[in-house]
Length: 104
Image 1 (cartoon, rainbow, N blue to C red):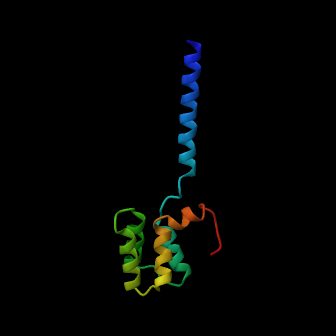
Image 2 (cartoon, rainbow, N blue to C red):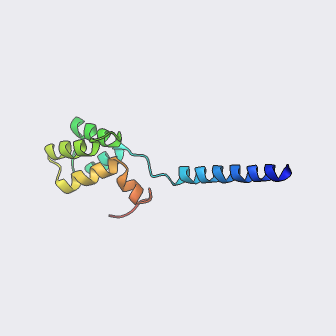
């Protein structure tokens, strides 16, 4: 009886530990502010269209990245800056950088 209790406790602890490791190691949350900050740093003024584009990319919906990229391009953002900004909005940059500050 005590052996079964010990085994059940061990399994429960392992499941909780694995679950918490996944939670802690999950990529950074997507944020439109990362996109907008990048654009501002690159010299592009914030507009309603740019904010909407970054919000759509951060929303995680299907087509959000493409929408973001297209709108930013239509508002005069260079292809490289648009791609980077939309990557930052949808969390790709933060996840690949380990959510740490990295010089690019």
